[in-house]
Image 1 (cartoon, rainbow, N blue to C red):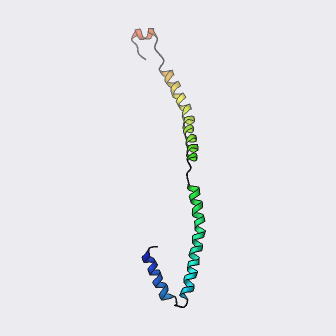
Image 2: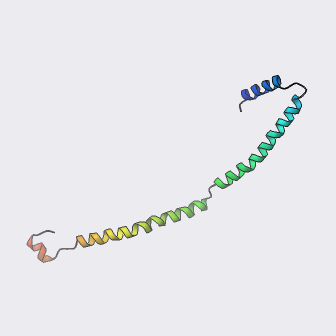
Image 3: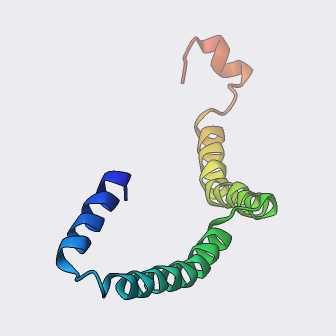
Length: 102
């Protein structure tokens, strides 16, 4: 809340609440806000602690991520290499002297 909001709320309270009840209402309102602040501060601390990123956590996740693509790609790479070796076999001297190309 900005200062202008606080002033507007205070003016409305002065108009709506009778003067003899105003101190009691303000005390109760302050208690409510303090209790709310205390109860939410523990929640915010928990959220900050859970959201904190530790360097060792990043290293663990990165190590897992590094090896996973390698394990997935390796069978594909072996298939491509085998296919390439099968289709591109070296020519013998007899085939190259014919002038025929494969």
